[in-house]
Length: 319
Ligand code: PHE
Image 1 (cartoon, rainbow, N blue to C red):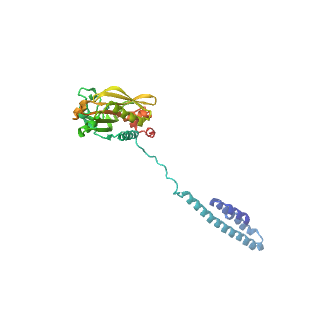
Image 2: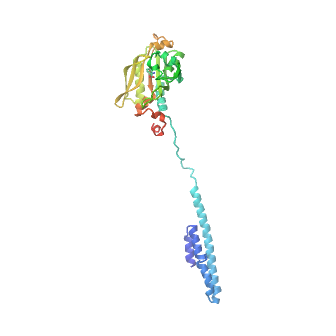
Image 3: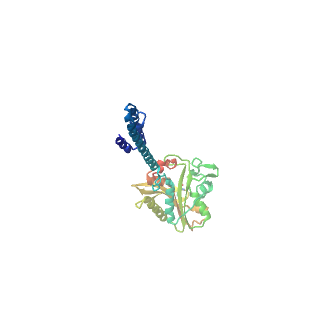
């Protein structure tokens, strides 16, 4: 009996099993308890001897059980600590990290390209007066672009700029030529569909020096196109009209197998030079204007311009 019990106790591997063993031998109906009860049935002279043996066995079992209980308690404690142990050498939990908006990236990319060609970045106010936004740019009162339907006016003489060209006027009024600037910024027009936003982002360039020709303009735009769209990008100029340039061009870029119209450009109109006090006989220059959203749409095949302002991370994450 003692051997059986000893074997059972030593193979018990948790406290619940050990308790079952205790009940089996020492409980109210346990083996040992029953033996003690049998004592009465024995002949008188055998009782002391039998009683002593059963007692000894019971003491031994109690000893074994409490030793084992200690051992198991210790084991459970170790296991519990093992479970909550912190491995300080593990890498931390990965967090979602934000990044620059696609338009900010395109803007910086273009700024770097033009800076590398010697242009300077200049900014200006979003709320403009009609003189800087239109008159100085040779856009007379009767011009359709001045229509209240197309622009956001605060009053007769104040509006949200419709392009970043007024920055060129402000710069020329402040500085003497020669100069080379680009002016990025938000512009505002009453337009809204899959290719137009009432607020979009432009970058305009202005270069003023002696003997500037269309050839300089075309080279500058080719250089930009190659850096943005890859070495195989080509540029072509088509005749167009802007009040502030003469001649004026619409500019196409050859990209992914087709000609895509991406910007407007031209040679600065002599009237614009007169308006800022430059002598058109002495100075000449080119100007161009591009939409950052348009560039990004062409480069990445984005079809809806409204995606830029929806702030849907599923869109933003792609760029
Ligand atoms: N300012 C023109 C626009 O917003 C773009 C442009 C700039 C065209 C410079 C020619 C020269 O449409």
